[in-house]
Image 1: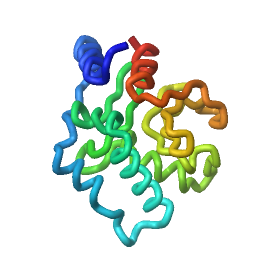
Image 2: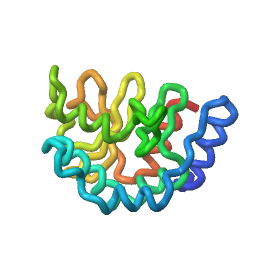
Image 3: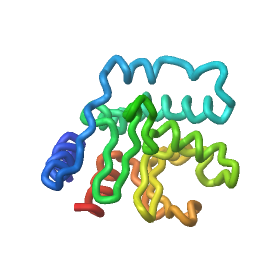
Image 4: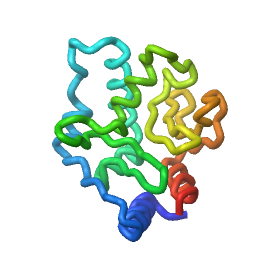
Length: 168
């Protein structure tokens, strides 16, 4: 089993070889601000809750946070790992972790009860990737039937390795 640094290096090599763009790492001072600053006071409760949960994930799972020292999320062969700060024309990308979690917790059409206590961290065509605080693990969940956990991993490197295997 490769360690996380090796996995991220392998992923970067795959992305470069296949002409996928590599996102820059999140600047340390930006990451520190995201971890330390409270959510804006004017935000609705669901947004504050998602923001605090994302902060908690980054603070408590340093293995997960390490990805952002290498790159701010990625999109490769249909696999998307949500980013923290990437923007285009000063607008956050659709794959921003905050946007995805805000939508999951406050959607006009449907709020999925299987996801409201999780942090969504990525997706592919068939699955959602989430972190469960209750189970202290990273999960691959069926996108159509989110109560079904396809895989769960307590170690982030094993989780990421499993994801990379599906696209390499």
